Amino acid sequence: MKKWFKPVGAVLIAGVLISGGSFISGGLELPQPVYADNEVQRNVINVTGSGEIQVKPDVAYISVGIETQADTAKEAQSQNAAKMAKVSTLLKDTWKLDAKDMKTGQFSVQPNYTYSEKEGQKVKGYTVYHTLSITYRDLDKVGQLLDELTKAGANRIDNIRFSTENPDQYQEQVIQKAMANADMKAAAIAKAAKRQVGLVLSVTQGSGNDYSPYMNMSFAVAEKTTMDRATSIEPGEITVKTTLSVMYEMK
Image 1 (cartoon, rainbow, N blue to C red):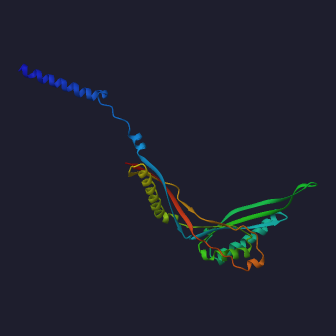
Image 2 (spheres, one colour):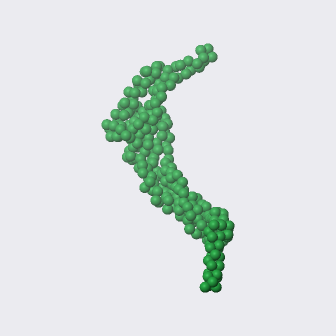
């Protein structure tokens, strides 16, 4: 009986020591190489892909203004308010614009100064400037609208910006183009390095932009001979674009 228990006891003790050493002391385990991050950094391709499409605008943002000068601030403001009321009535009643499509852009009352060596700086009258931001969607009639506004009293048209009210509808198209552009760049880089492109590891989209052209038209009331001719406005096309920063595995 003794001869049978001794080897079993020895085996049991040895087993406990081995398993205990493995469990208690991590130092007995082989060190794991830490190379994952560095390895990834050595085996990736980072590129920026861009995509863009040309689309027809569907909305115009127009800034029109009335600038009035008078001897007193009160007089200038009163005259300006009467002209702006006429312009607002035209837009609401004749052109059927909703109130949400018209808002004040800027309003200011400023003194006008003159200077002479004898009298120095003196106030000579006041200027009131009031602008209205208009959202208009019938682009074929923008020129006609501008003519009517100037006839109603608007003596400044600061700019016209053509755009699209829902640029998100074009995002899928520009993203596909940007990704294709990134794929092409990554493939070219891998080929030059005698490697291959692997999986996409990450994608970050840049700010999607609607690059809408501006048409600056700052002017005073034109001469009658000029006003007899209708204003011609061509919306053209606008560019919707985006960028993608893409990281690829390089095999």
